[in-house]
Image (cartoon, rainbow, N blue to C red; front, side, top):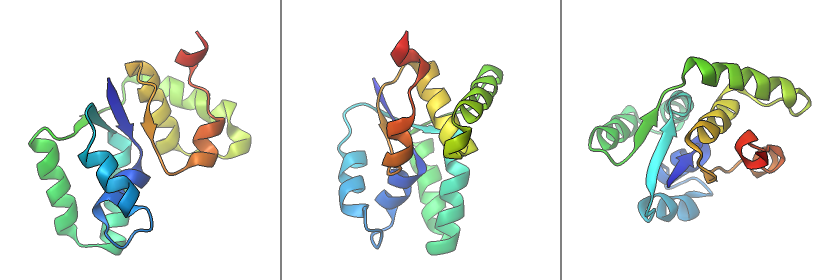
Length: 132
């Protein structure tokens, strides 16, 4: 079992000033399962770190990845197909690429747990693996 991390909790866990820091930091540090970061999430987190924090925070995250605290999962060709399907299926909700990629990777890995702060969107999404 693993916990798939969306950008919100990952960023909030690093930013003490973030309103969700006190909830997200212990979630990540106390996780008993592996922590998985979909590769597109890193780009989103990098953006917010460079806007609100310092570049050294992102390099510390990269060091944590190197040390094995997180596993980064890249999208496969099949994942891109699924991302397109998700974007099409939820077009009225204006789902973005990163959120669709998080869902596609969770489906591929068969992981039912996604840590996110985007409750509105992820409550609406139904992974294909849950309906099989």
